[in-house]
Length: 389
Image (cartoon, rainbow, N blue to C red; front, side, top):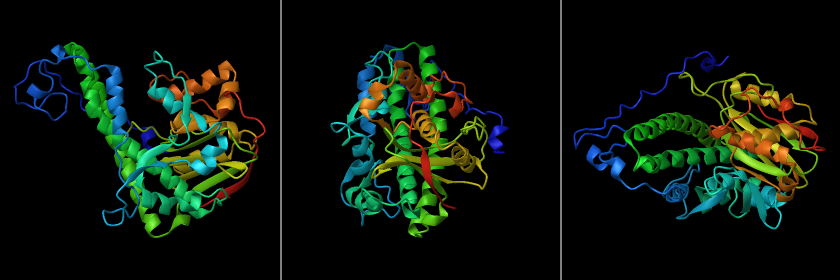
């Protein structure tokens, strides 16, 4: 049993808002700025339009660096590119229609324009699943083995799929922390109690994000070492091919807290024990889709138990289980437009609610299992298991 399951929740020390401070004292909000240049007379300052703030936050996503295990100023190209986390030629193009796919992430970007409603929207495959995580040279050289139309799901491919998913989450977390400095400005023009509430919320979010970033940094270091040693087979992985092409693809990594049967695995807000992660990719090779898991962690730990719970799902239900996993845990998920539009309103709304579950709008009980959800994928029996140590 993971120690976090019995650990008490210990929040970070709360902020101590002060309406009046010394001009040159460090501001109570934790920004690191002097009070006179931060929260002094904040209630008199002009509010920042939410659209402008979101645009500035979006700009932080354009900041990147090369995350290749051997990246350096000497062997990187000069240009950081929009690298695809899901291969464009295979996975994205396979499910696209007229060069577009449906994106939940695009819906989140427009959530204020849609009066708080999440409305997944179209995005071109040239922009879908991209992040500024590699220079052009290293993106091409590192992932060439999994960019062909007919690569095999061997040890190296499974490792590279997991590494790319982890790199995406690592850079996304770094940029999310960077955006907190912009979000600190949200309380301009607000009364003092509201200022305190906004800054306290950001304070807690920052503490959790920094803990998550440290985990990601450690995991990436582990993957980097395996890559340098070309020790691909030592990274645990498990993959399953499906009969036919699923109407969605995804890529990302997350901390599994509940398995596919509703069993608690770990609670990421509790204790100081090392948490475990799972990398997930759903894509296509030729005429078949696959789901591939990669992870690190203890034998019999939360990550391995999560993957084993998926393995225990019957072959005819694995496609639905993979879909629920993608929409609930990974924002980096894309759908075939005609399939998404053909869903019944209840099915589409159910999937949208599961997308929202990670941002404080959860309406589904925490131990929901894959058997409890509606089945929208049929005829995609899983076969041909691929396992690694």
